[in-house]
Length: 246
Length: 304
Ligand SMILES: Nc1ncnc2c1ncn2[C@@H]1O[C@H](COP(=O)(O)OP(=O)(O)OP(=O)(O)O)[C@@H](O)[C@H]1O
Ligand SMILES: [Mg+2]
Image 1 (tube, rainbow over the protein chains, first blue to last red):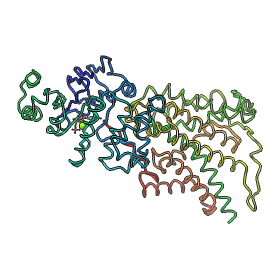
Image 2 (image 1 turned 90 degrees about the horizontal axis):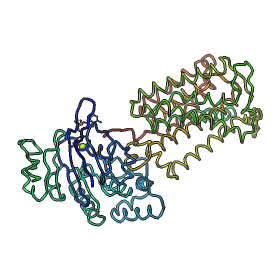
Image 3 (image 1 turned 45 degrees about the vertical axis):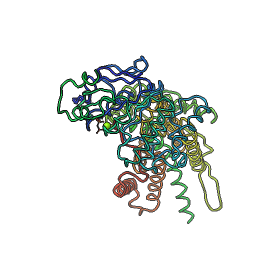
Image 4 (image 1 turned 90 degrees about the vertical axis):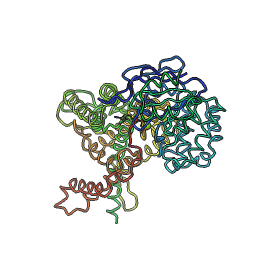
């Protein structure tokens, strides 16, 4: 459903992504891992239209989305939960959520989405009228995911959901993500620091390092974690991509 | 006590003008990170919209002679038009440019508008008698209040309440607040950049139009630079209130108004000529104590 081919992104003289390709099929959960500064957030932001590419193509269900505005991409069914959540702290929890649904036309469908998000995140229902700035880190992460859901996405990109959260909270966040995948058949692309977690939840894994894709493979083929580690730390640069993808 | 109350009313009235202008500047800054120095020239433009374009010394009113129900919307539309045109011709091509670049562009725009007015209307000040009834005074007990002060305060209060309702209760209002806090994130959620920016210029233009009318009613004269001092004080008000916070802009406007009036009233007579210098010194003190302004803006970070 999402296909990225030969993507290149530059910040001035720095090339953050070099010939990056990736694809996510309908219903899949795909994890992207890689060391700090690898370009993971850049890749996500670029797919969502927040950063422009110098080369390459991005298509969603066969339609080209590279070069389109972020709001257009959001409207075509792709939602990004950015690194650091970017909660609107001066708005209430409710306003944050409703913001995601302004492109929906009728009140009923907005209310239906709101009810659905509340069902997945009971904690948000309790804090509905509070200022979003007063939420804890974990609650903010839930709000960010809930808000993205309000846009009615077919595919959701989640950038480092575990950032700065206690392991127990991270487990909760993943539990919710996985229930969304199962119940709503939501397609997920997740940027995850921990390769263990990625291997546990994903159907497929990508490893990005220094702006280049180093490894792609099915999670079940990579369970021992060794190929992932090598790609992650760059001990062995030989053709893992072809090898693991078979 | 009576004089003090009179001074308070004067302060509220001047503060109103600053608050309206600061809100117009703050709104554009919130959404575009643009400090629009041409906002003062939008005000000037609104004032000149009252008279027939001509370089003759004696101004011929056209719109200025209409009944207020027609006059106010007409001036608003004129200023909104120039605000939107400025965005389209100057700021839109610079989307994504750095804030200093945008600020320089707004200086250039300011200069162009001023000179265009000078070319069309001539360089001399003109006198316009707008709404003479506002020159009368109302007596409330021992207080003598100029009607204009009452109207200025009432209009500002009404606009603030209206803006608050729009920003809190309506869908576009929430989108604007979100965009002012984190524009990119708002767009990731499907908020249309064009809608929000366009609306910010519309509201900002309307606020400039109202400020223009209040200013003309007060001074009775037109000059090409008439909007500048207000815009300068209003800009300082946005900084004092906390750049990026709309409530802060309003609070800042009233604070600056109060400072100016109170210095005017209570400085020793010899020093009153330096009122503005004292006011600015006070502003510097405020900023030393609270560098991010009285009401800190929360959403001023931007990165991937
Ligand atoms: N707005 C920006 N301007 C300039 N350089 C940037 C910008 N954003 C990121 N970079 C640079 O691009 C490279 C990739 O950054 P990116 O944030 O995409 O990495 P990441 O894989 O998400 O890292 P992390 O795991 O730390 O989040 C880094 O070298 C970073 O310094
Ligand atoms: Mg990152």
